[in-house]
Image (cartoon, rainbow, N blue to C red):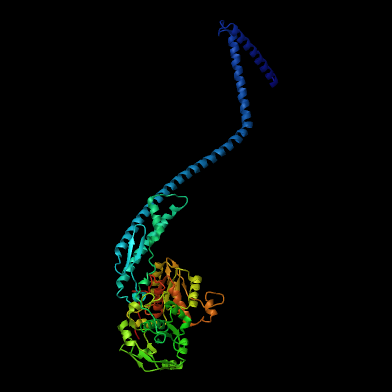
Length: 607
């Protein structure tokens, strides 16, 4: 007969309860009578032990089955819910740790490379400084420049220039190119050395720049001394101004008799030639103690538009020049030239032809026969002295005329001095009018700034003229551009003022080819007058804008104020600019003729 599960459970509970009582009773007996143990062979002990073990085994199996069922069904999800997030956290932080260690290693490697680069830069700075000192030493040893040359004194960190030369004139300097050939070669060599020093300086600046940042503090002596040296800029300006030594001039006083006059005859060439001729006539007037009469615009140029005539009298503090309009009333409007003396007798006396004679007569001027005190050929002028002129041209006549003295070779060392051969209190006697001077300053302030190069680039009619000369002075545009670029590099000027009569096709090509350090250097020309721009308002207001002679003098004035001037060999326009620069003490060591010392790389055949 089968028993149901409830009966089995009741029996199990009864047996467990009985076993517990027996077990308790046994413990009590053992506590009181432990000296009397029950023998293990006793039927009672065996029966009780066997039953106890069987029950424990039965209970253990039941518990294991119960725990297994509940774990599989209930606790599996709890454990999964607990350990899965933990697993995710562990994986995440393990990845972060790997990234952290990787970053640390990378930073370590970068720091190591950075240290090596810093060390290499400092070593490069040291080597560059040694090269720099060697170049400076070579420059110092190569150019002692004794006598009338420059004395250059160099130190470790900078070098200063003490000019002891008397540089009598830029014109004289440029007119003796053959004699000065060696000097130009030396200047080229010095320029090459300075270019290398400049490159050295630029490299040092590049290497030094990261060490001057706020994040890096380098206090090594090499870097400090390099920074100090670089900051000095070598202490040398290769295009510095030439010392004029104005106070050391050899001069004579111009103290004319108020009733004795000299009428100048200047007929050769254009305005620039006439200005040079007029300056020489002033020297003649001073030697002969006469007042100089500025010619009428009906016979010559209208000088009053371009020159400050009263400035000449103010500089000498006496009346030494008068205009023809002032002179005619003194002679009661009946002007007679008592003696007409020609400096050159060949090929034509005084360059005076029938047309010029008619112009003089049209002014109410009468004159006698042309005469010459000596035989002098304009193509081969001989050197003359002050005594020669005073002996041959001195006269008791009230009015004498002398012409044309443009080509006269008279005391060139006196004439070409800064300020000229006459004693006066100004920088120069013949200078642009106040209106032109102010207009030039306004143009420079508007378009150019303080540091600019001026280029007189003569082309019109110059090809044939230059090719007759030996050597030729007419250069192909690409060759001219190379020569100009070299001057720009030496002068470190950002812009070029262009005074030229060249066609636009030539100037456009020239502009495209003047490139320095990868940058095109702009060529600036004077724009046409417009009401919008105010830099030339003074000329417009006084009605002299558009006058060709005024514009030419304005060009000269701007060029004379430049930092560096590049002229056209053989041009009197250039020579007059050089005269102004010399007198205004703006002559630079970098002033030169275009492609000076070079031959054109191509010369056309003669007709």
